[in-house]
Length: 125
Image (cartoon, rainbow, N blue to C red; front, top):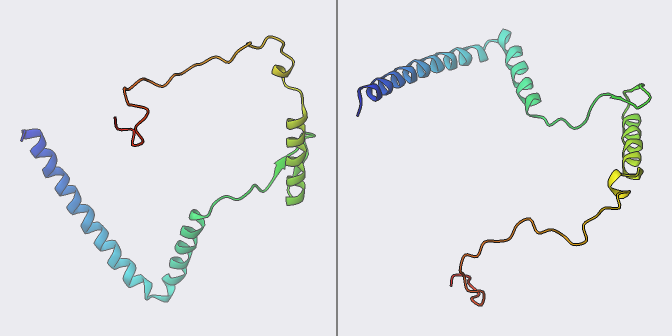
């Protein structure tokens, strides 16, 4: 083992010891605070924050319409999305009007020939 590697392992062990001591100290501190009625409110706030961070974002609170008006109610947001999607799906696209289309499809990729027998049901040759 090289000298640099030995030094790295020694530093890593030292750092892990410091971290474990700090974690243990903080855990004991939190355990003693959990029984204190003054700190119970803080514990509930931390738990509530942790739950809120894990929630999925299900929708938005507001949406700016095409007209520039900001909509905040759920029905208005849904109607705005419906209007947008209908417009998007019903408008003519540039490629629909193009007359120059290839007469046959172009093959961009062919599977490689790997030499397996095609008659073998296991495919193992």
